Amino acid sequence: MTLAGQLRRRLRDVVGDEGFVDSAAGLRVYECDGYTMEKALPELVVLPANTDELSRVVRLCHREGVPFVPRGAGTGVSGGCLPYEIPVMIGTSRMRKIRRVDIANRLIEVEAGVVNLEVSRQVEAAGYYYAPDPSSQSACTIGGNVAENSGGPHTLKYGVTVNHLLGIEMVLPDGEIVRLERTNDITGYDLAGVFTGSEGTLGITTAATLRLMPKPQAVTTLLAIFPGIVEASRAVSAIIAAGIVPAALEMMDALVIEAVEAAYRFGFPPDAGAVLIIELDGLEAGLEELCGRVEDACRQAAASEVRRAANEAERALLWKSRKRAFGAMGRLAPNYCTQDGVVPRSKLPQIVEAIAEISSRYHLRIANLMHAGDGNIHPLVLYDDSNDNEAERVVAAGHEILTACVKLGGSLTGEHGIGVEKIELMSKSFSDDDLSAMADLRDAFNPTGLCNPHKIFPTDRACIEIKRPRPRGGG
Ligand SMILES: Cc1cc2nc3c(=O)[nH]c(=O)nc-3n(C[C@H](O)[C@H](O)[C@H](O)COP(=O)(O)OP(=O)(O)OC[C@H]3O[C@@H](n4cnc5c(N)ncnc54)[C@H](O)[C@@H]3O)c2cc1C
Image (cartoon, rainbow, N blue to C red; front, top):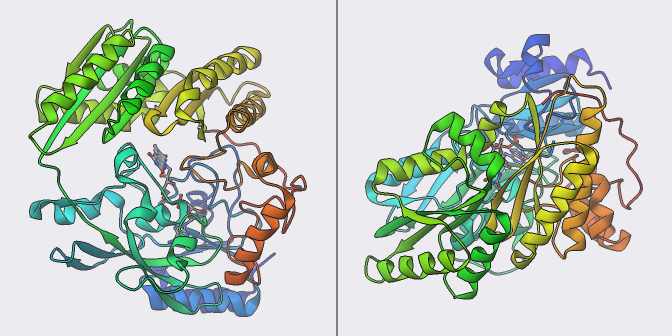
């Protein structure tokens, strides 16, 4: 589809030169998100400065029957904002206003393009923070977080985006601006809840009202070192079975440890087979006893050592090592592809075994990073895109891992969404009737299908193999 010159001019009139990108070099920036296996260029990108501009852009696309895709920071890792056969991309990077900080009512209203970490920065002096903390929090936007229902290391105890969302302002696919509230009035359907996790297929969030949490009185962060992943998994099950809910319970295997140690020099032992990062928080009273119980559970599961972060600087470095682990993968291979699946926590050893078998069968090294407390695994498949057929093998290996997750009673995604990456796998988890019911819901908001088409669902309604070509791209 080639956009008519008149529509281009009108879109430019709405957002001005500052918010209009159509040069070849400028568009390259938008050809993919963090899922770099597939790429496509939009014809143009518009960056509205406010809700009114964004609504006018969407109205124009709606009137002309032109597909469009929302984009935040592009840190998504399933190709949710891939502009495949979508001429217009609508970015929120200029919508960064903090509209309201209301400490008395423990809420903040921000525009969709505000970066996740900025929300906590705005309120930290008052002793508050925003709990959902994706590892990408220094870059990803609140609009993207709502679209993906994002979580993070601390969502084991505090929940994901939907648990902290008090309302959204959004532009429907025909350009109408609506507000969906969840603050005091819970009458009727929870439409903001429906919208959360819809991956940009129901409309575009322009602002969100978020719950603020008081910072915990005390925090202790532990590092437990294990001979291997099986032993570390046993400790995870034992901690949860003991009725303890840590604020975070993260696992890294030997390959991840090798990469992060090379990058950040925390001081992980070179022979560690796996480590757990365990954070406990709450009232000062009782925290020491809780730490002791967690340390005992780790030692009983064969931990060779359990250390506590000695001070805030050590704790920050430990979290930096964990949260920037994806970035450290460049120490191990020129390219990697992040997978994201879920298994019941007790099945972590089985999925690790399955991943090892897939790794050896495909001759691909796979590093394992996990939000272990949630059973949310992130195998990082390492490869070199300059090797023939390696990218294709990475995709196939990733699909086998996710299929294994589903067979173990888990699911296709814990937090990264379906996007384009996992479309073909939807039939592993859902029947045609299930998918059709979900498509009915999408059609109620997005009847023309112009808002982010070719995402989540294999076809319009049923589970038939997708016909989209997979362009080859480096990661
Ligand atoms: C290093 C790294 C670590 C990560 N760690 C985590 C993690 O711990 N937890 C986690 O959950 N995710 C994680 N992610 C994935 C990603 O950061 C999240 O999905 C994030 O919420 C995406 O935000 P974004 O602004 O980059 O959205 P984008 O990538 O731009 O878009 C993601 C999807 O949301 C849609 N979208 C974007 N903005 C809007 C809007 N305003 N309205 C409607 N739809 C919109 C897009 O169309 C697309 O479908 C990680 C990614 C990376 C690269």
